[in-house]
Amino acid sequence: MSYDMEIGRSKRARRTFSLDEIALVPSRRTRDPQDVSTAWQIDAYQFDIPVVGAPMDSVMSPATAIELGRAGGLGVIDLEGLWTRYEDPQPVLDEIADLSSEHLPQATRRMQELYSAPIQPELITARLAEIREAGVIVSGSLSPQRVVEHYRTVLEAGVDLFVIRGTTVSAEHVSRAQEPLDLKKFIYDLDVPVIVGGAAGYTPALHLMRTGAAGVLVGFGGGASLRTESILGIHAAMATAISDVAAARRDYLDESGGRYVHVIADGGLGTSGDIVKAIAMGADAVMLGTLLARAEEAPGQGWLWGAEAHHQHSPRGVRTHVGTVGPLEKLLNGPSRHVDGSSNVMGALRHAMATTGYSDLKEFQRADVVIRD
Image (tube, rainbow, N blue to C red):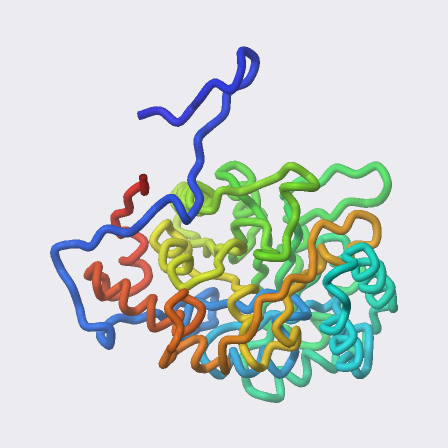
């Protein structure tokens, strides 16, 4: 069955699939949920759960990054967000949470104003130091446009994993306006593992892997708050995108003589079922925004927004109300009283792995899937 389809006489397109369009198939073997492992490792850093907290002010504060780290995951701080622009960002977070939902342009304008405060390098150092002092793995994120300006401050502060995250990140960026970031040279010169993305296809992901990245983000992030498709016309069908990037990982493993690059699904993961299917399609871990924004401890107070929502020239995200489902611990490990996949998300992953007969995440990537009618 071919998925290369004719749209018109001059254009053909490939048929791709979202996570909603696929489902897992149970195998002949089952296991007990307590006998499966959700552990994974990137470079020298080991984690009990395949959860990376998205670098969004509404999702990750230094405190929530610490809590997620203690729960076995990885929290990533947005190093160009409110926590590095304001000594005390709580009044700003409160104001954003209280903005009217009826007047979107006014709310967007006010967020742009709040985020126009300058980034203070000393606050980058202070926020990362706070996380390090708690004894968990330290990670921060910069957009490709800010990397050259601030990465030395980040490294001197002592980051363990460095994330370069944008709507799309390429190994080769062409610019006449300014000196482009040479990603391969940049990663080569660093002393820490770098996770970079987003990428949504085999070829761009393979080129990112060749730069020396330790991990590649698949998708465009932003989740429920992102409006990239309606504004830029760009979209990634996540089931296909993850599978394509997993194929690039496999081929790069052979090409490089055994160097394994981790695939991290980023975007469109609003339920535990989405997490399950993302890993079954080949992801090593998932970067969560919407789900973690629903924790009681989340700084967004039941609201979700990313950097796209306050872009100074082309905002392509909105502040979205996602509500609160409970404490982070119950959101991750239960017990749950919700039937919509919004809590006990790691319990659901373990149960899915047990039901399909797989004992660890690498095995689970081989799970059979079907296309839903």
